Every structure is written in C-alpha cells, then in structure tokens.
Image (cartoon, rainbow, N blue to C red; front, top):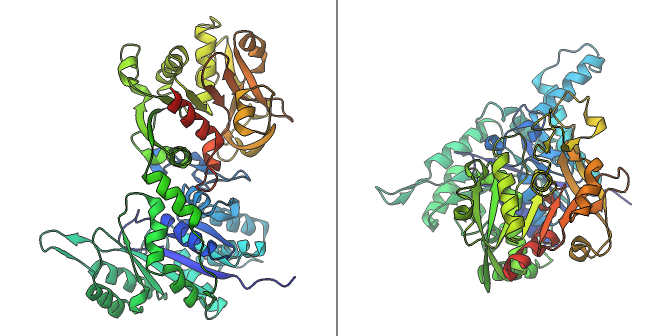
Length: 535
C-alpha cells in the first residue's frame, strides 16, 4: 500500500492566550472528519515541564491521560471528545520533552562533537515530533501551538513551522492564526489593530497566515473583513468569525456556516466533493439545548475554584445528560469547607453526588463527610479515583469501627491503612510519569450494578494513581455490604466498589471521564444521571 501524502495544518494564536485554539482545532478536526478525512490533532506546549503530570491543576487545569498512559494537556480531552478517537503520547509534545531528548542524544555522543544549538538541533527534534504521526497514515494532521506568537517560549516552534512549510512544498501545509478583535464600548466598535500587529509579528518570523479566525463578542462586518484581508494579506473569505456561543459544542456549526472546512481544503488542494455529515452532532446539540428533565449533582472537590481542574468530568455530565434528555446542573462544593454542622445545608436539594479525584491531604475530611452523607441519605454517589478511596476510608471508620482508618498517602503511621501503596511504588523517588497510568483491564463480577451498567464483563479504563485498595481488609468490607465488583485480572487489585442496599453507591479506581465523548457518552455517567433523575 502506498503511503498517503499527509497534509499539515498549524494553528497559532496571537494577541492573548486562552482564545480557544483547542476548541477551534477540535472543531476543524470534526468538520474534516465529517467529510470522510482521517484526521488527528496534536498539541505543542511551550513549557519546560516534561508533561503536566506534576503540575497543580490551578496552574494548567486538569491533567488528561491517554490510552497509552501519557499525562497530557487538557486540550487532548477536547480533541477526543470532538473526534471520538483516541490520542496517544505522540499527540502532546512539550519543550521539556524536546530538550530532554536532545540532551540525552548529546550525552550519548550522537551529534559527533558538534555544538548543539536551537537551530538545527532543537528545531529538527520539533519537526521530527510533528511528523511522527504521519506514520499512522492520517490524511490531515492539525498541530496546535500553545502560547501566543511573540512569546520567547514559542519561538523554536514557530521557526520549526517556517522550516517545515518550506520542506513540505506547496499545498501540503497551511497556517491558521487565531486572534482577538476587542470591542471598545466607548467608541462602540471592534478594533483590528491588535490582529494586524499579531499577523505582522508572525510574518517577522517568516510565516504568512493563510486563514484568520477572529474571536469576537460582536458580529464582524464586511468592512472589517475587508480591512483585515487587506492588512493581513489573506483573501476576505479566509477571514472567519468565531463569535461567543453558549456552548463549545456549537462552535463547529458556526464555523461550518462560514465554509471554514471548505476554505481549509481549498488551501490544501484537497477535494471538497464529499458532503459533511453532522447529523448525530446536531441531534446531540438539540437534546442538550432542549432537556425534558433537570437534576442537580454536587461535585465535591478541592480545586473547584478553577473548574478546568475537572474539565473532563463536567463534559462527561453534558454528554450523559443530553443522551438522557436531562439538564445536569453541577453544584461545585469545596471539600475544605465541609463540616458536620453545614453538611445538610451544602447538600440540600441535590439529586446526586460525585467525589472528585485529587492528590494530597487538603480537604480530605470534608470529602469523607460527603461520602457518609451520601451513604446514609441514599444519595446516588460516584467516587472517582481518590473518591473511591474516600468511600473506603469512610466505610472503614463508620461501619467497620476502625476509627483511625486512613490512606497511607495521608497518614503513614495509621494502624489501619485501608488504602496503601502498591509494592512496586514503595521505592519510587521521581514523581513524574511513575504512577499506574493509561488503560488497564478490569473484570466485572456477575450480578453487580456495574456489569448491568457496562453490559460487559471485561472492560478497560484509564488510570492515574499511586495508591490502591488494601486487599487485606476486603473480607471485612464485603461481610458488611461494600463489595469489590471489579478486579484487575492480572494484578488482582480492587478496581471498583459498590454498596448493597443503596440505589447507587459506586467507587471506581479509574477515571471514566477520560473516555466520554459526544458520540459515546460514558455508561457510568449515564447511570449516575439516571439514578439522580429517579431520586
């Protein structure tokens, strides 16, 4: 089979960060996929961390985990949710990874005594990483470059794109530049100057943008489009408006109305013959916007003041809610504020609860109180990762009577470590990339809620944790009604717990939210939404 001629799209941003390059990239990926093209999206992150695995969620939002165990940027979550296809460690590259690779090569003597420099050594490694995905025979690879044009950190990436465009030849690559059109209320007009400066800065680096996507709060007039086209050297039809919408899932349709995908295909000299099929996407949006029921679910966590920390969970509720014609309202509850006295007040009127994942001991006692509340008041509860561990500690303390029960993560001296370190983790010194990561098997037991929910005995789910349920205590738990409904067939580690005689009280050691997409909402979230609606 002859190799495809892969086309490359580079997405850069100017004027300000957080303009939504990830959503625009994901939307474009969806539009191209809907026309029958095989598409993937890659993120280049300019920070020097090797990956976001050791970053506090307040720094960078949630850390997303791929099937092959890479800890990556949360934008990869958007790519998977929009494209309904898995990404891998090759879809996220950081400056840290680039320099680490080049320095390792230098130490081995791979550069034959040459002086190692940003050009060509760093840029060559960036180009290698960009092209690595082409081996998987994609028609189109979209590469989103993090940060803002003009940042010192982004310069090597911009230079690599300049070189690549030259090497790939005509019609094999293009640049989409995302920029901001600020609205000045005093004069009542949109201003194009910041965008002009941003495009000029890109041109100073040797790159001409082919398409401008303009983030704006107000409609762009024909005059403004003409002005941008004239000063930024792009055809007027290549100036695309990206106006604020009520949900990110509306963005692909807004871009399609302006023939964004057709503009891109024309730039890449690709055929526009297949009609795009967005029937399922439109159906999802219709159900999302016109719910027949409403439930309120308390999301109990310690990073709730930055909701991006739980991005995949919030999106999984949107997917599951739409599939059930139900609006899911999340009540963000900071676990550090929970006390015996204010529990009832904080959870008044909720239909369900989710105890979120996390690390460290802050806010732990509040989460334990939340689990107790849900258990005693028959509130449907899903505990994810640390959430399952919290349910374990609560049950050990309040049902088994082990008052000092704890996780070895929070108290090394506890006599009852119902959550403890795996043997192979005990001597781990480095914190980055050393947890149980990526897809692991789980075998569900017959006659359990979970096998009903999944409809399958053998499942695989993505993990991101270091501590495990301590199986020495399993008999005591099961005798008292909290039983292991899912076990890893290879390690025999407990993967899931569920409580008898409760409408929905399930803890999972894995992260189901990572696998929820618009096309395939996760069955666990669907089940929680259903249980909440029945309550």
